[in-house]
Length: 127
Image (spheres, rainbow, N blue to C red):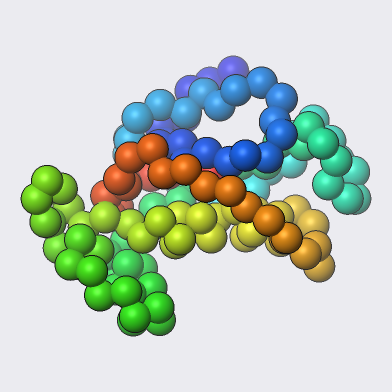
């Protein structure tokens, strides 16, 4: 299996194997989630879905405006960070989006998160 140049943001969903994601890189962005190991019409334990994305400074500004989260760390480099930091819940939004593409009409009911490190704007992340 090849290596991904993306920062994994993790999920608590059951998965087979482990992610091959490596620290932040600069490769292209995948357009859609990919179903692995199971092609069932409904999610089953062990299904593995992945997606990658870059959140730009424009994405952060739009999310800040929508949510009212005006924390400066999302708009500018603020020590100890060298760049604006992606909102945690913006990162978390990748998971229901992956499910919606794989299983249109599915109801995404639960999510547990643990943020391991800050993700700077324009970094490639893998969910």
